[in-house]
Image (cartoon, one colour):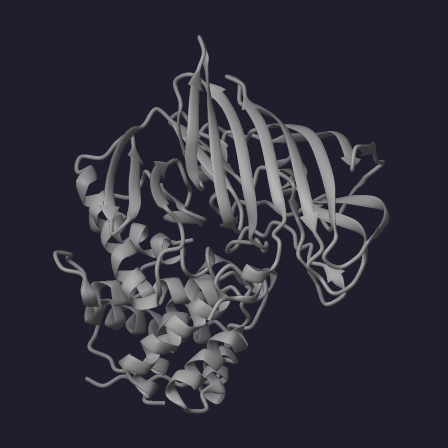
Length: 487
């Protein structure tokens, strides 16, 4: 996700100190079949069938599913909206979701389930028997949910409907337990494994649908339209609905789409997405899907990434909008194809996407930003941030914290996005551009469609450069790097 930086600085000339196929491609993937209908009053009625493959090395007796829509309910312990931004998110006044689990079955047999978790955010489904490694079971969940009117990932505005994180999705099983983090308001509190999706989405007739994957069919009736969508090897599925105009182009063999309802120069937005797919494909490895869609929508923050789909806030214009498009496109490599635990290791996708955005201007032509200026602005901003918050008694600049351990959006943004990008620039300066790019390609190739950890990135860089880099990474991550400026 791309956030708007709080303007803390005036840019100055400042320098930094010198300081194969993935395993998942060999496994059978879990698959989801979703049949959902959205009414004109924004109530979603859905059936989700999860054919879950136990790709863990231990047997399981139950499965856990995230219930992300519950974060938008009245009385939720964790609000998905950052503190102090309620009015922006709810311009028409507070609005809540109501989610009802109608029935759950396992292999056709009805099950009594429990809604638990730290914030009623987990559906616990007993299997009734042991699911051994490599075995598969089928869980069907029938539910309905009233969408909130909110400018966020899940909800609607007067112009669009965001259907993201709207269905029960299997929790990752790791370290002997299911990972069941709540929906924090800071960052992107999601963690999931790649799966295959077959989605049937019926919506009011006036809506165009932008979605993860490929639209395979579109059937119209007197007052509805039904979309058939297929998405293979994707980390999750999202869709955006609106009365859109659509432009499309090609980046190599990749179809790039831009959905918009208010844009005086839509061709610029489309071309930014096309350029980003091309440049990142050249530098990191080929974009893994047939299509990529950028969609303008009502959204509180700059943008939000989903596999093969990026939401761009309709509040962004001009160069800042193009910058958000580039950042979210970088996430198609870092988060989309190469996954990570976004709660525990948020820098691993956000810092990578932010630095990739800076690098974009190094290789793209016709843009008003440059790599050098973006880098200088980032360093100036981070140094002023450190001075400001040190004087306020806050000296922890570590990047190893989970989302819930940051004090707020400002701290999270400057440490994860800005400092994270500076860390990667220091690694690049240490090993050289050629070896740095070779390390990124190796990291992408080795971890595509799977889950990466920080040591995977460090290892790829060490292998490409034949240098020990863990101490350098650790000094940044632990908050021990001292930056200095030259005038």
